[in-house]
Amino acid sequence: MNLRQLVVAYFQYPAVIAYLALSALSIGVFVARPAPVLPTLAAVIISVLLYPLVWYGLHRFVLHSRWMFKVPMLAATWKRIHYDHHQNPNHLEILFGALHTTLPTIFLATAPIGWALGGLGGAAAAFATGLLTTCAYEFCHCIQHLAYSPKHPMLVMMKQRHMAHHFHDESGNFGITNFFWDRLFGTSYAKVSERKKSQTVFNLGYTPEIAKRWPKVAELSGGVATGHPASRIKH
Image (tube, rainbow, N blue to C red):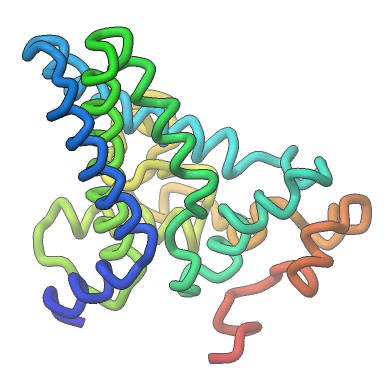
């Protein structure tokens, strides 16, 4: 896959179109009800800087939680937003999160800050920033999962670490483009040789034994993910 094919594939995802459309709508709201320059800049900068921390926390403590599948009302959501992605990282139809979970999260992580700084205009600017930042993150996520070989050293590093998260040890490298918080909290690893191979990298700890007690995800998935995807998924 070359860069042009990557870009074409990226814009075929409905989530990307939704993020761009909502960001354009938010920018329109800002134009109609603008906030002062300094509050707007503050809202934008804080949203950009806060985004990696929010993603790290959600990825580590929610998406990789071992409590969501125990709650009947949340089991299907957990399966869709991350279990399916890990049991088959090459299942590109679910590469992006479900909009009914991502959009409220982006809004709550950005809009209140913008509102506090600049009212409606500040909230619109912050929300648009969160949406566009998400688009940038998801483009890098496409690079990491699609058959594209990046040449820039930083993109190469990102892809290597994210693939290690998916195929070696899921308890580290929670960042997508930013690994500062991984380094700060001790969950970063640059080489697979630094860690022992995880036995739950494809099922996130939802093992056959666990499924006997909390069967909802297994019932929805037709079983529990065990072994490498290439050995159990027909292509």
